[in-house]
Image (cartoon, rainbow, N blue to C red; front, side, top):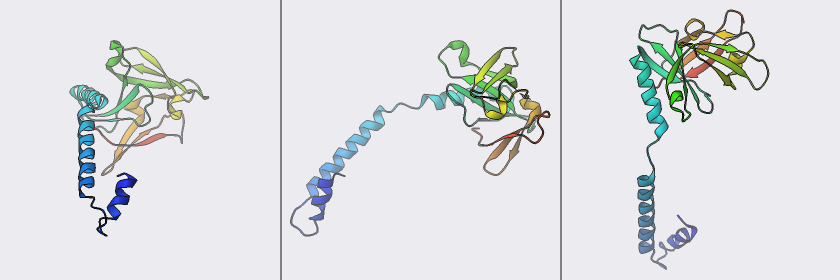
Length: 185
């Protein structure tokens, strides 16, 4: 509401200026504006894309997934639980770039740290035999000498609302990677 309309509406109680028509014009103008904005906003493409990717994973024998927080840039990590009620998750990787070969989702066999300095690099090895260098990996993943096999080194603890992903490797005692998570499906 503009300051002029607010100022004029203050006189309505004293009867000096009638602002009823001015108020109606202002309301009509705002209703038209909100209708125009609603019509021009397309549905979010990423949410639809993410849901279809999760559906692909579920069809492979998984029951619930979440996106790992702090996935940066065009990379998304999905952490999914299998139908066998195991609390050891599987990691899936998706690159949101435009190339058609990158639009699929790949299961991660292990993540291996390469460097202890910034920028932090880690190498992901996929089940299909391919690998990918991951720039700016979470610190725990990028430590030199660490090899994380999600199905062996990671577990999920469930709470009422949130759950927690924890990854520990046998060669680094006392260190762990943990994140609070919420499942998409």
